[in-house]
Amino acid sequence: MKKEQANWLAVLKIAMPLCLSYIPIGLACGVLLHAGGLNTWLIGLVSLIVYSGGAQFLIATMLTIHAPISQIVIMLFFLELRYALLGSSLSHYLKKSSHKFILGFAFSLNDENYAVNYLKFATDKFWTPGNALLVEHYALYTWAISNVIGSLIGSSLTINLVIVDFALTALFLFMVTMQVKRRLTLLTAILSGILSAFFCVTMKSTLGIVVATMLGSTAGFLADRFIRSMSPDSPLLYKVRGPSGTREMINDQALTEERLLDEQNEKTKDTKQP
Image (cartoon, rainbow, N blue to C red; front, side, top):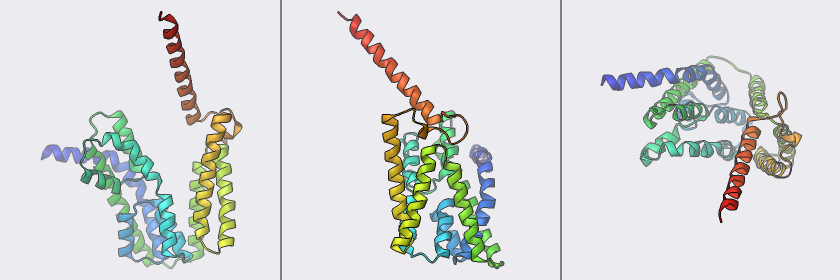
């Protein structure tokens, strides 16, 4: 029993910085969701089921503009698709886990606890799937409680929806800015913004954002593959600011050099054989 207590306490210390960072964002998310029309019980339920800051802020945004539920669900689907990639990168650490465990693990997975667990799995040989699940649960409960407290604060405040729109717009602009690392990413973001405005006006519905998201992301992916295959040293792959070589480019270059070295070694072996 003492060993189990020591384990949960040790994991809590690892998860504590993540949990503390969730508190101010969770409070703000709860306030904005309440301003969007959700009551405290629904906010708590959404926090436990959706468990995604970006998704919940998106819900608040679309609720303030009275978007249909179907469009909100579609937007959340495309926004949360990234978890399929995040989960797949952790799958080989969970090979011996049961399907029931994996289901619970996937349910409470998000960007931040993924980063913590991936780092621990990669650097700590004693890190277990059970410890990783504890990190997810600590973060999940902290996030949900912060959202509920934020909704209670929001219920005692009168918030102008214009301010909510401004805050959410500023938040998503910040999220886009932090993701822009290469010139091609910046061009893709600009293209997506133009497409969003065009399709929202043309379709007279927020469903245009979904169409713009699909077209913009597909165009960016195809352009990235084409440029990497035709011109790996293209300026479009350089950083918007700072050194021109990104970590991805350095990794690609290292893999290319390693592959060329292997091919050269194989040729050398073939020439030595009688």
